Length: 259
Image 1 (cartoon, rainbow, N blue to C red):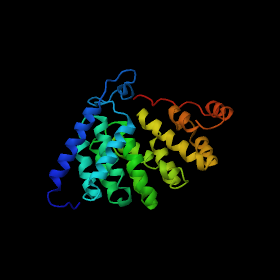
Image 2: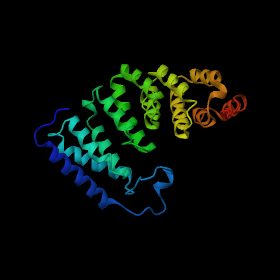
Image 3: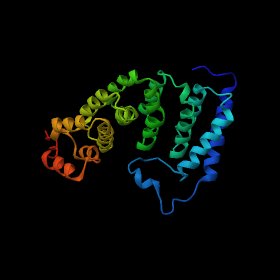
Image 4: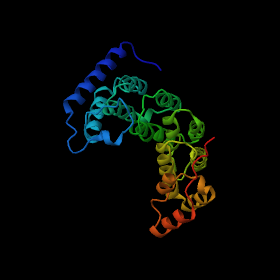
């Protein structure tokens, strides 16, 4: 990573200004309390700023600095915000990096993986934002790099494993890298976390949009090994009668036997 002299203070100042802007836009939870969607994510805080406002703030930061910052500077800016406990602060950093997508290069994959592995994205929303706004667009530009996510599916970190499927969804929507997605899905069926079950079902559903017959063959072939949550997500777009048939013919997965 190469940065121009004096950029560190500029990045620190910009990060501080972003946090102050979020504080000014903050509002009480009211009828909509985002915390209800993040049960178990201890330490996560919320400004309750709507997504369009966050993205407008990110774009204003990008517009102000795009003649001075490179994608590496944007990454450094994001890394100042990711440790903040507020969900929106993390989102601003990711959104600013996303605006530099024309400068994405494959080497960034390993840095985003470190964000996940070091729990800088330790909730499903931030993880999915990294996947949908950063990892996915990079892989669309460099589809041959999708195979790198195969090793992520066996990583000890929950968020890296989730990214091994969610990061492939933009490619899956175009029918690309389906072999990698299906292989990762198969490795993750035994995962104990519900957030993985949902992510795998989401990935399979998207893969099925471009090749529904392959999805049906996969579901029948793996049968009871597939968690029920994964199966329900995967068949969500099937006609009602076909959904019912799959739920009847594929029995629920047996719980693991206790020693």
